[in-house]
Image 1 (cartoon, one colour):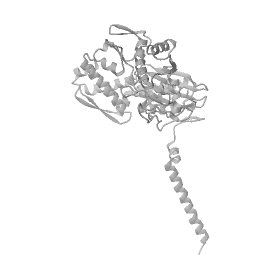
Image 2 (cartoon, helix red, strand yellow):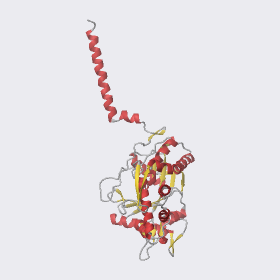
Image 3 (tube, helix red, strand yellow):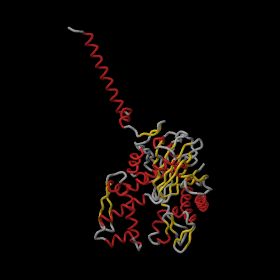
Length: 428
């Protein structure tokens, strides 16, 4: 069966396919699995989507909608001089996904489409209508935390036992969602859910931009105002470059202690540190951790009762998020190298056996699986709950520990041989 799973997000859309060979792989758009969920009306053809839409918005921003998912309740959106149904905007993004899936698979037999768990029948109906407008088969709708939980066993290489619960912490570009789900014989049930609809990676980008303004805009007020409130294509392009560079610097600071940022519009180079970023966004990240803690309590569980806390969504890779969770809840969360794709991959695995086959999505045209290893701090499931891994325990059970153990054993044997020889020889 040719299967397509789509995670339609606020900022980006991710899609994963599985062909008749049973192997999963992400669809790539302009060389990346992240397709901006943006739409721009084109007067001469069908709507533009993704990065094409972002580029077109420089010339005609009135026809641009950056986040159709946030307009799900609006019915229609005014773009230029036209009222466009939201289902049509979402359908344009899904059509872009279908075209790429058709190109790779020659068509799809089943579609799975994820959605926030709190969405009711009317909102889900907009997704179904959008899929129909995109020319997709009737989709199977999957709640996002359920999809994420279905991916968790593939990350750890072991099944979640029936009756055990897992917390999902989903920090994306535009929103934060969290849920506690319990493994059942049929799959996963949502025990509790919550979220912050106005907090995500875009807010962290904005915090960095404002800090750059405080540090460097003095004496450049006119140029800085043109960056923040562009009125022509040149200024809009400069603003786009600023936010692209800020986003890249933020992502680098998840891996490095500092980052350089070139601002050609101001003719200067800015230096950013991870410490500065964390000081700017600590309060907002703490809000997500508090929301997670309340959701676990709403599920009538303690953090130690969980089999783990699973971090998904692109902004969850910020190291401070995992540190705050660990400090607050006493559980070392499971993180991914590519958390943006976890929900789509989980939707793909939804009907896999409980242990979860260790299928790793592979890049288009490649044979090597996308790295999805959990980092060192992975909670270990046991009857008493989850505890951070003890570094000393890891040493004595690792290769180095075995070498030291063997050496000590040889020294003990040698000492016994000498002692026996001395006793046998006796005095004189």
